[in-house]
Amino acid sequence: MVRLIFVILMIYLLYKVGRLLLRGLMLLIAAIYSFISEESQKQREKESLYQKERAWEVKQKVSQYQAQGDLPSWMNSDRINDFNQGVYQVLRGSGIGIEDAKRLLNHRNPYLRALYVAGRMERKGATYEEQKRAAGETLVALWQRADHRQLFSDHLE
Image (tube, rainbow, N blue to C red; front, side, top):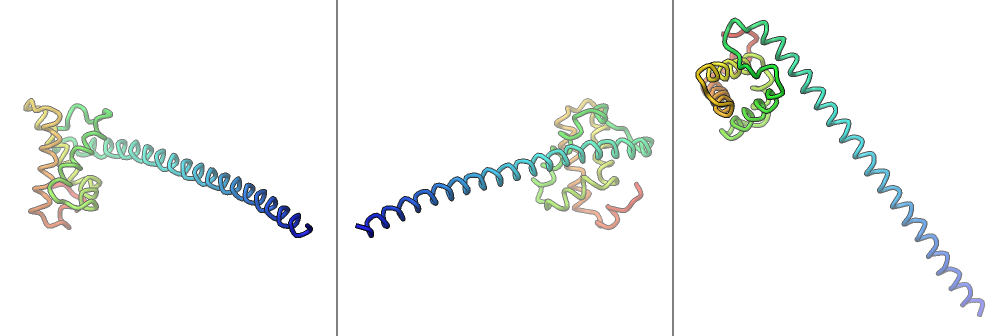
């Protein structure tokens, strides 16, 4: 009889401990999810800040070199991020690697060339989509025929 009571007591204790462990596990999962969500929100905020800083830097650099070509009228608008995405897709679609495509878009010399192409296309009446495609194709052509050290030099040709 004592053994039966002992077994029942042990089963009851295991049940209670199991419930506590399950609750603890659920709390741990909730805490991890919350941490991951918070980190991803911070990352999105960083990327947004980076895009704003990048747009400001491009605006500053472009003002220095504006005499070298025509810039598109939408240059100082929210369309610049869409333009960058469109050009990036053209670069990736042509077989240029991820890092090289990012490098082409982040270095002033090739990037300004792409903007000048878009500006000239706009002056000739091309649509925004045609401007993006032409700018991307220009960077692809530059990439394929250029010495990459020269392409990423700090002076505009």
